[in-house]
Amino acid sequence: MYVIVGLGNPGKQYENTRHNVGFNVIDILAKEYGISVTKIKHKAFIGEGRVGAEKVLLVKPQTYMNLSGETLIDIYNYYKVDLKNIVVIYDDIDLDVGKIRIRKKGSGGTHNGMRSILKCLGSNEFPRIRVGVSKPRQGQDLADFVLSRFRKEESEDIQDGLEKAAKSVDCMIRENIDLAMNKYNG
Image 1 (cartoon, rainbow, N blue to C red):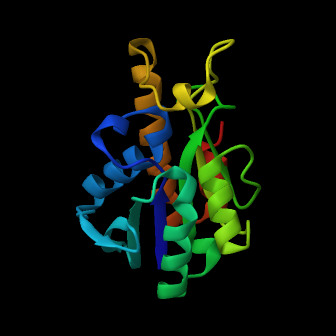
Image 2: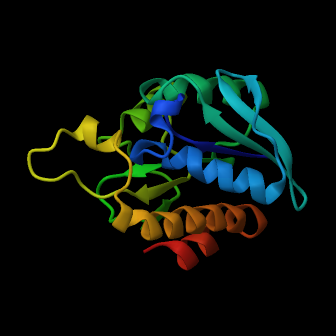
Image 3: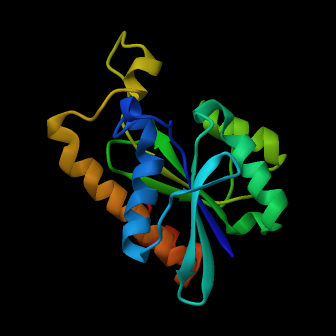
């Protein structure tokens, strides 16, 4: 079983913001796989389905970003899923808009959602896909920046990045993470 978690904030005011790219990737996967992500369980919207022979759970935590770990620990304890089969998708200000970076494990860096997950799971041994949203301009508040929408000139790059992130998840499930890293990192 694979648990694919896209990080974001619930509510209309946060839709399509830089901080919600994880939710956007889950939406792409849900459409691709025909999975409805509308059931409320584990403080999240979830949807269950199959990708090839694998059972897949798509997850959009509804706890707000800084408490994302509450959803993950709940799911981890309930499904008893192997950590290497939990894939977390989130925004990264250190990557250019639309670039993606896949890692098998790592720190949470400055990302509060990932810090919450690492604290609750007590481990960093799970794969993650970071989607680049770029850095704030000089003097711009970081919180305001990540809660802002993409500029018109960034729309093509971010859409390409979201699609690439979704394809990398599919590659991880159908093939393996090493192939996904070789194919999609950069």
